Every structure is written in structure tokens, then in C-alpha cells.
Image (cartoon, rainbow, N blue to C red; front, side):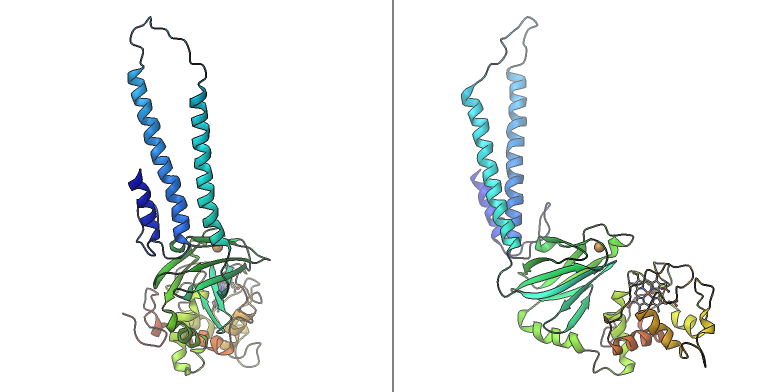
Length: 363
Ligand code: HEC
Ligand SMILES: [Cu+2]
């Protein structure tokens, strides 16, 4: 028994362990409290399972009916036994409650001075805004190690839920109201963030990566992220867009020609330039581009598709694309258009991205 309890304490006192059969690695300051509760309950279960099944077997053998005419008086009550089986479980649930409540309060009470990130869930991607730096990340969240971080979360459409298993944190994300959670990462590394509330067709693609980086690199990284495209020339924009902006489109638009919620980006520029796109109202893009037409330049059609996606609905699709009005800066819209024009330079035939944000080839 003693060794079991030292085992529990040691297992939860280390800041990062690599997980075990039951639990993933633990990499936040509050993970210990969650794991302690889990371990206490699990070990109580092991202990009583062994005790009860063991005694049952022993009693089956010891008190079995040894001859057919063996008759005994049925059991009456036994005060000592009844008190024991009431008081011991009572003490155990009090222990479970205390351990659980402490862990719960740790999770709910964010410490003072948290670094704050605003999180928006949307079918089917996560957007992370860093108000302090004016930086926006999609499907990626960069945070400093050893600093408490508070996520203030809401949803643009349906219920979602943020879950970072390695940090042992999880909270619903609800349209029309804010919820929050906090964590302090204990180790530099990459951690999975999942949506854990079934939210529609591509729920399983609603993933993000949490990058925990050294605290002294954080400010510089975020400042760079906030305006890395500002200083880029037009020629550098496709590599930037495919890495930093495409993840806002990825849940609905493929790069390899496969069908999805929206039309594939593969060959999109050729279809648009030649006016081949047909709309559900029977119109065709060829009548809307060219001299003295609504759009003139085909680039304006793409711009309109981003800012006002319901205006023309491409045949075979539903009008489910969200507007990016106010979410993309002018230069980012240019970057997306340039990405379409140069898609072959930044992806391979299978739709894999072949360049880093700075234009160098990926490994
Ligand atoms: C929730 C799903 C969804 C997301 C996210 C999304 N789109 Fe769309 N998109 C659609 C659908 C559906 C259509 C087709 C219906 C329509 O025309 O509105 C479409 C159409 C388009 C078109 C017109 C395509 C054509 O063949 O004429 C463009 C351009 C486009 N999207 C670009 C983007 C870009 C760029 C992003 C990311 C910044 C993005 N979309 C994000 C669903 C989405
Ligand atoms: Cu979701």
C-alpha cells in the first residue's frame, strides 16, 4: 500500500512525464492535479477489485456447501461490519472530493497577469488572435513556456470545444458568449489541440498545434508573425500565403483536386481567368470578366469571393463559405490571389506544400 501511494506522488510531482498506458504526457502546471485525482480513483478501484474478487473466491471455497443436507441459519445483521462498510467508503469519497475539488479550482482560477489570447471557433478551424501583438494565427497557437496563458473563447457558428490533452484542459466554445480556460506549459514543444464537440462534417479536421517556445524568444516571434508580410515583395507572397493563410481555407478547399465542401484550389486560377466557372443561377463567370463587365479583371472576382462569398454560388456547392471581410488585410488578399496564380510553384502534384513561409524549399 505504501509503495502504491509514493508511486502516485512521484508520478505526479515530475513536471513532464511521457505518459503511460492511461494518460498522455503531462506538460502543464495543472496536469498534476488532474492526474492525481485520476490515479487516486484508479488505485482505489484496483485495491477493491482485488480485495472483493479475492475474498469472493476464498469464501466460495471455504464456505461452500459440503454435503447436501447442510443447512444453516441465514445471516442476520452485524453492526461492526455495517459500520465499517459505511465509514470506509465515506472517508474514501471525502478523499476523492478533496483531491478533485483542489484540481478543479486550480483549473478554474486563472492566476493574475495571464497572457491573453482570443480564440474563435468556426466550422472547421481555430483562429487565435494575440491582441498584445496584433498577430493572428490559424490552426497554430504559439505561447511562451512557463507563463500562464488564458484563452478567451467564442464561436462564430455552432458549439465547439477546445481540448489540449497534454495540458489536461478542455472547455466548450459557444456562439454568442465567452468561455475561458488557462494553462501554463512546463516544457517547450508541440502539442495537439483538438475540437472535442461534434460540430459537423469536418469536425475531425478541426485541429491545431500549440507551439510552446522559450519565453525570451516569444516577443520577437510574435512581432515577426504580426507583420511578416508587410515587408515582402509580391514575388514572396505565394509562399507566405500557402503557409500562413491557406490553413483558413484548408477544411473546405483541397490543393490536390479532391472534392471537399468547396471547389479545389488546384487549377482555380485557370478556371477563373478563362471564365469557366458556372454559378447556381445559371450565369457563367465568362460574362462577368473582361472589358466593360462587372469585374473587369478576374482578380476582382476572387476578391469578391473572399469578401462577399454569397454573391455568386459556384454550381454544385452550397453557399457555406464564410466572409473574410475584416479578417484579411489588403496585402493578404493580394497574397491569396498570387498564391492561386503560382500554386504550382508552392505545391507538388499531390497537393503537398513545398515551400516554407520565407520561400525556402521544405525538406
Ligand atoms: C467553410 C468552408 C469554406 C472555407 C473555410 C473557405 N471556403 Fe471558399 N468556398 C466554399 C464554398 C462552399 C464555395 C463554393 C460556393 C461559393 O461560390 O460560395 C467556395 C468558393 C470559393 C471561391 C470561388 C471558387 C470558384 O471556383 O469560383 C474562392 C476563390 C474561394 N472559395 C476562396 C477561399 C479562400 C481563399 C479561403 C480561405 C481564406 C476560403 N475560400 C475558405 C467554402 C469555404
Ligand atoms: Cu468544432
